[in-house]
Length: 364
Image 1: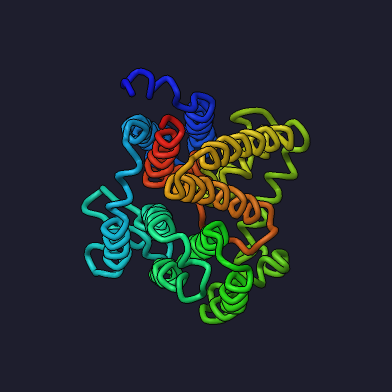
Image 2: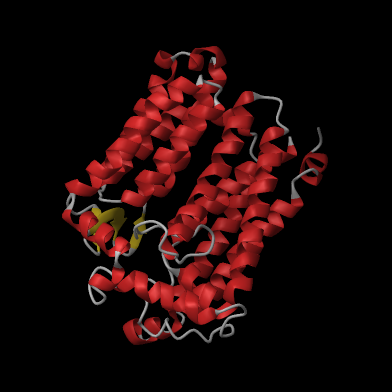
């Protein structure tokens, strides 16, 4: 197959949707952060410059990944998983791990930081896809899915220790979904899902701050200046937006009322400025990205390509849903970026590169 014919078959609608979503993210990061960046760093463009750099690197990574022969990735499944587990462990090494707001989720040298949990999600997808593709029959038995559980459990354990409950939840859901897609028996899924659900309340009780967050979620007004503050401000933003919003750049909540307006709670600013209409348009675009991804994965005639494609789509879809549930107060608040939109370079670059892999699956 010539290079040009390979390239001509790339899924252009998906490429344009992902790039469009990331550009929309840059606009919203500027809107949400310009005031706080001006006050904190003396530069209204502080966050948006970083986001633009992340976008350019992400775009290069996406185009480069789209030219890969993804079948060769199967060789790196153990190495990629091992590296991501080591990086997750390095978070706890003094001097290497970087703390922010009481959680140690980054490793960094100087001003350069990386969030290993962003890479670990995709490392697990690659490992699971390779494991299932090598011997599809073994996953039917419970013993056969134990390596998938061990790998996913290791990632979850290291992430929950950071502590990062939301990413742990995402990886847990991802693991159960991939095991389901592998074709295992439903009773095996039940044997994993039920203990996992039982573990959630235990994890909440284990950490006092999580218990506070849970009580804030159940009744944010009980402590409106403490634990309930962020959720109340988020709901104010969404309520203030009404159907058609206050207009782009016209949010009131971004004037330091809503914490993390440019990152974890950017959807609240979208809701305030663009209204319910804007939020529905955002979800339509996200659903379009998920649909194109599922379409690419389901057209693959190899199990590895199918599992890899579905895994990438699942990472994106689960995160969008969990972030939206947090921002709207449907589940307790936890820090999780809105993929392609929230401020944060690791998330943006890794997500765009992962869609490059999906595009590569579409072109071969």
